[in-house]
Image (cartoon, rainbow, N blue to C red; front, side, top):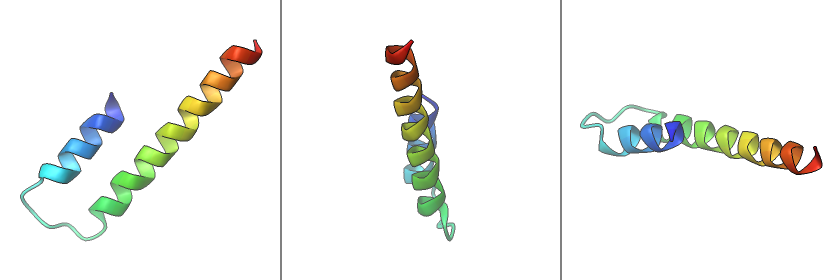
Amino acid sequence: MGTGIVANAAATLPLHVVGLRVCATIIWVIASIALIAVSFAFSAH
């Protein structure tokens, strides 16, 4: 849910901030990796 908030905020921000899209993408990738890690740990448990 938090990554959706970051994506929506980055997409609808009326200002053009340099690096905002890259920052939002990095946050999304970190969250995706965390989701995969938690899913793997849960299935291994």
